[in-house]
Image (tube, rainbow, N blue to C red; front, side, top):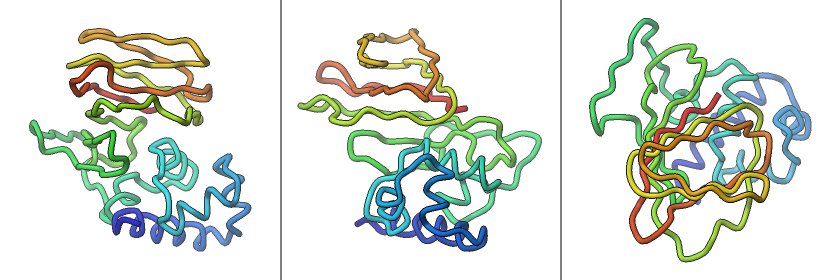
Length: 183
């Protein structure tokens, strides 16, 4: 269990306790089963960005606070220089850089994502409330949405209802970089 996941779990547990909710009720509010939620709270499993986004939205806490324990401070403009976004270490195959981490009351989450090529296709499809937009900068991205496969190249984009099953992975032997916007 990584220290980062453990720290995020501690912060999520605090939000649940402040909300005076059982783990089962908190999990239900996030459309999760209690067992999965407890793995997140205990830092035993990677939290999908979608779960962090749902906690942020439902419980009115900034995602930056969940990820770092610090509060965003900017409310009018947030400039993030190249390579200076907040690095989010979650899954070995993805590197996330939060591009608006210091802005208060965001309407969406903005990430620069780098996905490394994998020998095996993703084993689990994800679904989460909201919508998602991805714009490909470098490399090729395979998106499987409800069983249908799309290959995206630099300059291509996809916008979809993220409540449906979807997976994404790098195609070929080079990493893919894309901008992801999660609403």
